[in-house]
Each structure stands twice: as structure tokens, then as C-alpha cells.
Image (cartoon, rainbow, N blue to C red; front, side, top):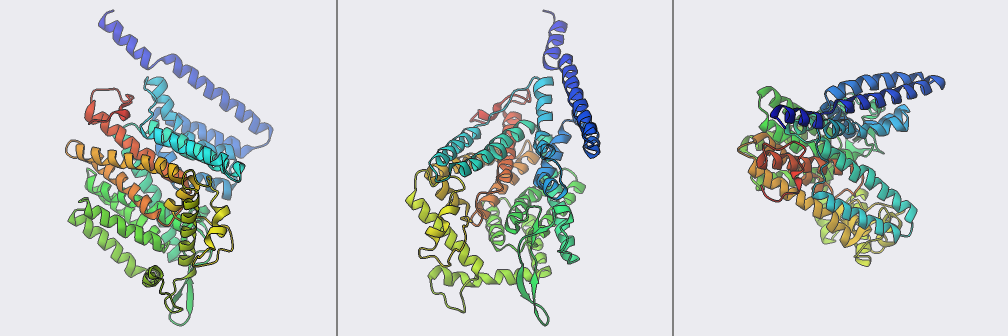
Length: 509
């Protein structure tokens, strides 16, 4: 075969025109079918949404990466859930948001002949699913437990594989980081506007919600209630967690972007993110922030200028929000709690004693069920029984563990802890390795690896006070960290290989 014939054969093998025609024909048939059904039922808004979606789909087919950025932005802002809950968007359309990631995947598989990637972390995810399944089978309420298993499959394993297979280049990974920063800046701006205008009676389309009552602070004459931002999740401490997770990404992107404009944009987005985080007035988030900064400094990842910037942001927030200082002052009661020398004057508030009681209850459950636990999402059914045995506060309702480690231990036992945190350990180890290996040749990639490393650290530190829920954020984070590892291995080890080559399973650099 001549060189010309061989080149022609390779082009047609990796980019066949007939696939484009068939793919376009299927899309057209589906669109026409849905459009006729919408007209027949009088669903004009569905038809308009279809037309807009078709136009966007055409753009995404010519620029497949756009659908990745949009999907990441929408998922991080919780827009699909908000669209269903607040605006009545049908379930099928809401569920299509993660499927936006299929467009670039299909493009790579069908038109570029690339392979599906199954990273090593997939083994740990499979083990975790197996432990959850066995735990559900042996639990006191298998149908309810299997709902959690289903959530792990859809919002965990499948979402993980979609993200890993969609994000395959350094350019796309960088775009996703910017999409995350844009999402965080948008949410932070919403929360800031809500605070400055004291418009807590509005939820701003569902992106600035509240959860329960606020906390009391002393005003000039009377005690007032300070509301706490709960963002798009309607859970204030969880909102604090997902905002704080973006802090390392913004900080290290600020230090690694190529132009001054982009660096300052990254810093501005990081400031807005931290404002949104601060307006949750989360004490657990403050502890996690402190631990993360200590870890950054201790591991040598914070330069002096970065440390000054972090200190300046924290100082300004504390000066601008005296209510936060009031919340943090409650830490003075912790020594009395830890030593057991509590009196009416130094007793912690009900939220603290309740959390400690729930954590102790989860530890007791784990001690009685150390191998496989009581089953996914089943701790609630044991919380009162174990929590009221020597607890600091009587639990009047079924409660969560409010601790990632104690909760996973109680529900999935030692096997669950090994499966979940084994994958986390492998990911952190690989991120550290590629950060060092790419520091000189690919500095921006190295900084993004550092950002994802500390994004996971933030999740682990905030996990001291939060149980394992809203898992799509955790698995998306793990997927992007894994994608960063895969990309780095490819560019460092096989710079001439195809982008679809699954180099994620290799151990060397």
C-alpha cells in the first residue's frame, strides 16, 4: 500500500464521513419526533426549548468542548435540581444535563477513533459499590438502602466515567477549572447581593436559598437574627463546603495563568467565592479553612505572596463580617466540652452538642458492626438508640452522623472505609507525583494538579463535620483530579501518542 493510500485509509478509519451522516440523521429524526409530540400536546415551551437545544447542539458538535464547560457550570450551581424544583422543568430535560458530556465523548469515539478510559480508581469505585450492595442486602430496610446504591451508580460511578472520558486535554481541563470558578463567583455574587440588600425573603431563582433560622447577634439596642446563606443547595454548611472546595483551584490558577488579566480574573473569582463561603457563617468551614491553609504552608505549596493574599482575604472578611467573629467566639466552649468540665456558663450551644452526640452514636454503631456496617443510609434508624446512651444531648428525631468518617464507618464498616479512602489516597498520591513531574515542563498543569490535591483536602477537612451526601460534588472532584493525572501521564510519558490512548493505568512517569 502506498503512503498516500495509507494516509487516506487512516483518515477514513478515524474520521468516517458516513458516521457523521448517520449521527446527524438520528438527531434529526429524534428532534422531529419530539417536536411533533410537543405540538400535538400543546407544549409550545417544550418546542421552543427543543429548538434552542438543537441550535446549541449544533454549536456543540462543531465545538464539542463547549458542552463540557456548560455541563460543569450547571452541575456545580445545582441548576438542574433548581430548574425542576423552582421552575417546573420536566425531569427528562433535567436529567439530560450530565448527558451533555456524551457529546464530546461520542465525538472522540466515533470521529477520532479514541478509546474509552477506565482509570485505576475505577477499581476502588467498583469495590465501594460492592460494599454498598452487600450492606444494602443485609440492612434492616433493603429497598431504602438500595436507593442510595442507585444514587452512587448514577451520581457516582457513571458521572465519574463521563467526566474522565470527556476531559482529556490540558486545555479542556483548564476550561473546566474556569467554569468552576465562574460558577463559584456567580453564587458568591448572589449571596453577597442578598446580604448587602438584606433581601433574604428572595431566593433569586433558587440560587440563594436559606435553611432554617439564623443565629442571634447583638445589635446596637436589641439582639437581632443574622441569616446564613445556603446557596443553591438550601443547606448552609454544605454550601460552605462546595464554595471552599473552589478556593485552592482559584488560588493556584491565580499563580499559574499566563497573562496578568487572567491571573487577576482568577483572583477576583476567588474573592467572590470566599465571600459566598463567609456568608454561610460556618464554624466547621472556618476550621477546615484553617487546616487547609496550614497544610498548604506545611507542604510548601504557599509562597509568601500567596500567604499574604490569603491572610488579607481572611482579615478583610472578618473585619467586614463581625457576625462571623461572634460565631467563632463560640469555640471558647470547646475546651470545656473536650474535658467534660461543662457548666451552665461554658456549655456549648445545642448545635455543637448535637453534632458531637451524633458522631459518638455513629462510632458506637461502628463498634457493634465493624465489618460491613448497618447499610447505606441506615444510620438514621440507629441514631436515637445509640445517641441517647450517654450522649450530650437527647436526639428527638432520626439524625445523620454529620461526620464523613464516622458516618461511612457506621453504614459501611471497615470495608467501606478502605474502599472509599483507598481511592482517595491513590488519587492524592498520583496528583502529588504528577505535580512534581510536570513542574518544569508544564507549570500550569502542575498548578492545576496542586489545586485538585487541595480541593480534595478541603473535602476531607470539611468532612469532619459533614456526612457523605450530595455525592455528585465529591465524585466530580475525584473525576477531574483523575483526569488531571491521565492528561499529565500522557503529555509527560507519551507526547506523540494519540489523545485517546488510555495511559491512566501506568505506574511510572
